[in-house]
Image (cartoon, rainbow, N blue to C red; front, side, top):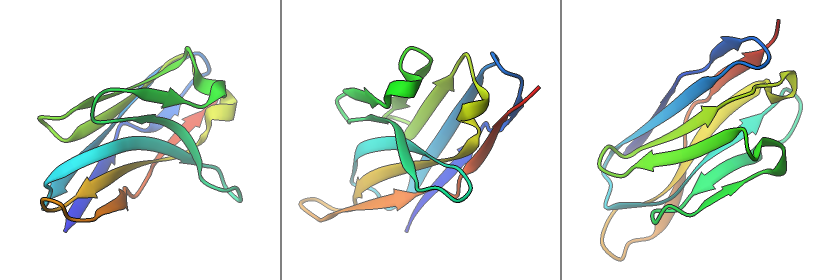
Length: 121
């Protein structure tokens, strides 16, 4: 079993900051890409940012310069530092990771349960 536990969401005023964390635990050989997605009510899940095991990052245009994704491979944890938050950033944020559970085994994508971020005055 692989488990993802997110934390750090909440209510923040426009212009504020939040830091999301997602810790991965369980039967893991290696973790490849880790990412954060957002899902607003009635809308499809959208990629916010991703990071490879080597540290290569990718961001959606609307968060470039405001959000920073990072990971601690020793702790199997991915972070999302969110600065200059806007009301449009309001959504549930879910982390994902592509996990290989054994040597030369297949890679599966796992998801966290989501943490709500609400940006409002």
